[in-house]
Image (cartoon, rainbow, N blue to C red; front, top):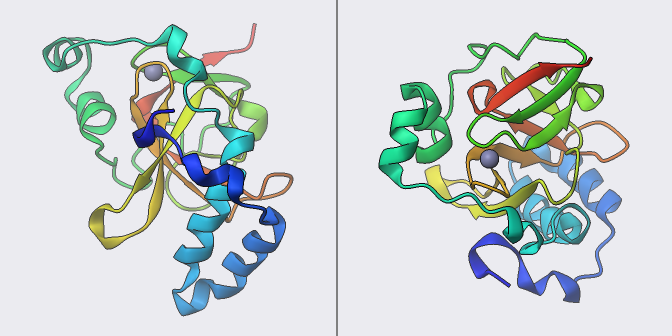
Length: 186
Ligand SMILES: [Zn+2]
């Protein structure tokens, strides 16, 4: 198992995810929610990510290749882990029926049926289309403990996942519009 892409210790954890999500929600005001948040992601990781299983479709390109193929903004967000300005992305208030793919490699990541308005300024989803479509990485940048979400095929940075989404998952996949490409349902 690749240490960087998963949480190898998850098998030892027997934590009730719903309880953790509730803790997270009640602790939000105090600012202490990140510990519970981290624990909850550790707990749900076995369900939502099986690190290593997507390796057969791995796409590897050099940095120069990505820079050539992507727009400046796509490159900045997807390959340099940038974040688009809130409410600036084309999919924030978009409600077309169809699927959202990785802008770098085309792997389908989300369906419009799981999109919801989180009011946070970025397109948000409560579920990935397939648990193998993304990988989770612990992100301690900017003095925060967050869970980064990357495309399992090309490792494009997509955004982060937070435990304050709606049922049935309680998750909010907070994505950058620029990392996604929408295709209308036929
Ligand atoms: Zn990709």
